[in-house]
Image (tube, rainbow, N blue to C red; front, side):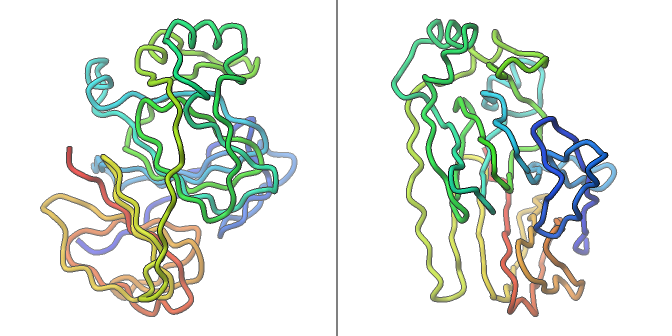
Length: 273
């Protein structure tokens, strides 16, 4: 199957923005702010991964996602590991990952109800270029002033534990049950520009390679497996078709990325369970 450019879907969010960047047009001020841009798979496809951009002007809810076993026990096809690439960050931008100390699920529930969960979370500064793998079960939140590329398992499954008083549904019972409320440290990311390889990150369910200014010949994928091409900067060609920032492509079989001299792009694929 040839490389396919995926359709973009914009999602309005109360914490979104009107100025987006990274290949996306700004949103008129008289329209709702855009918080997410999703990339829709071809009709009939049910891919393993989903790619989205996040544009934040306020903190997102404190939330958690179940792992595969917990999600399937509740009737969903899979859980939700996430990988975040921080594309832009205001100087005081932060994210919350895990808790400042191990807490019981009962303490987590009480803190979610009275709001003290904000103080239990481990808020950490982030900057452009940071890459974070957030496995299912990690209690987390994304702060204001961030543009993030998120590559996740393909399921829209989020349990909100706390939402700063916003009038949105919470999912305390399910969320507490699947939470792993322990400290989480962002591991250092090794980078190697010597041969054009920027970085590689592998988690339990997601593998990502980021390249800068490098042509790549890919000798095929496992049967039925797709690879996602996400251009971050510049332009290039995949199997002779032009790509640029603000797009997402789904690739299968052999593919060739060429004319990538001014580009920076990610290749991602799912890791088998």
